[in-house]
Image (cartoon, rainbow, N blue to C red):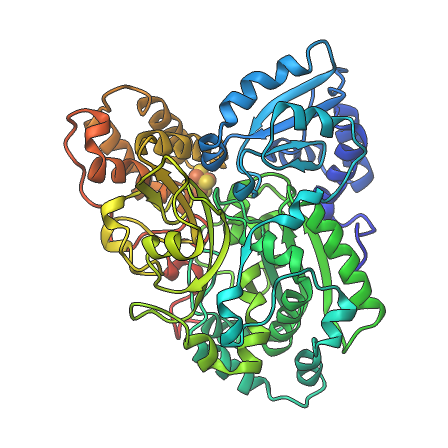
Length: 578
Ligand code: SF4
């Protein structure tokens, strides 16, 4: 239960690589050889893992790591806010110094775009001057500006939503009645079956992107033979998504109580929390809050391990995350077997996104009808929209499921930025497609956007104005996917790269891109490759004028995959099959 974990377990290889990489700012051959000897595993295994993850700086020979690395996010929201200019100007500010400036994919702070990261310190709304200032400062795990991160829950106060406005530590969480439910459940004073029924009745669906009904998932895993495990996905790598971080920074124990409740109802013996490496502040916070929980536990606790991702978007896919927790390259598995049957360490595994667990306590305490009572336009529940791009007030917006983009911008985001009119939007991050302004009155929810070739995924909404082009957004996204492809299957590895190069032509080659899109969709193992054609297809369908006279492609198929959830039928076994 300690962090970092002790011992020489094979599954801790990535943790050990982090310790070395942190100490030396890179990994030399000698580090890898020494680690292989110490762990008594083949050198090739250590190397293949170290070289898979972007955050391990594997260097050949005796070349030393640069004294300082400045990372600048160049994903879509930061690109809209001037990341390219920042990247171009920053090296000049460090000329003659031992400083490296590198572009990196989304760092999960899109509401603060553009963002740079100096060592492990994020610089929100980065300017060259602010980055230089940060580079001379001692390490600060959480930048003070984070406290001012926009977060909207006020509309719900009169509807009895809990107050999420400020950070809540262990003592104050317990003082407000926190952990009473988990303790009652663990001590046998509450009925697990009743809790399960509340979860099923609430209609809560997986909020990482796939949208599988949470209660049904609990029941399926609960029926598997023990021992069972739980793996919690806090990897949050989808460009445009930052809701999990926002909640974690403010109310970590509401999430941890959800973990305890799920672990008790499903009967899992150990819990693995997989946190993305970019969230250094969150890691420090979770370590501290877990320590308080263990020091004064409200009830018997399961074994809980906090694991550190290493910069691989694909590890947000559930089976890739499990591979990573096992200390391997984060490559998605072929299914069956489904992870509900054979997941972590070969055992039945309950996999959940952070936010799904965050809502558990409130749903059980207030009753399933409380959660299901929210909603607009015939939809039910609450959604946490991560909104960024050309809106006045970006941030996490807790809003009713089914709200339209137009309503979201007007009621929650203060309208569009000055000088920008709504042109297009990405409703679900990198792979959820791109919709035009004329479709801004569609309800935003699971299942509502599929007929239009898009999906909501983890509700990462990126708004484009009339000075922006959808084709530039699509290219940015395709470059990201090419960078993040795990390389396991050729259609994805080669197809994303080839598509990104074809998408730079003034007029797109519709026939070739259509071929590529079809092969990627049909022959990729996981949702990353299967969903990669979505931005291309949306540009042809809605913004053909931007890419010449190419023939519009057919609409994407109805059963759209999500890169981190895959289609529902692949996440869990068919009902009754287990
Ligand atoms: Fe890896 Fe892409 Fe294949 Fe997924 S589709 S397994 S990311 S190569």
